[in-house]
Amino acid sequence: MFKEEFYFRSSEESTDYSYGYNPYHRPLDMYIKNGVINLDKPRGPSSHQVTSWVREILEIKKIGHAGTLDI
Image (cartoon, rainbow, N blue to C red):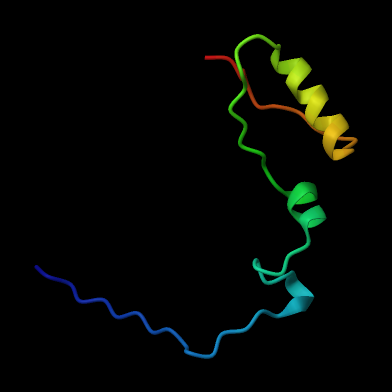
């Protein structure tokens, strides 16, 4: 049978800044510290080499990749 679902959305939404930032006003360093970089690696350099370049460019101490970056 058909089940009706209702969703209510408040017209006055706000972010409790004690829990984080509004995504539109979040500082770039917070994205880098807690985020994921989706990277389309070019053919040629190794996954380790590209990870090293990103580490240097963004000045990040802890960085890694999940699996292979090769096709």
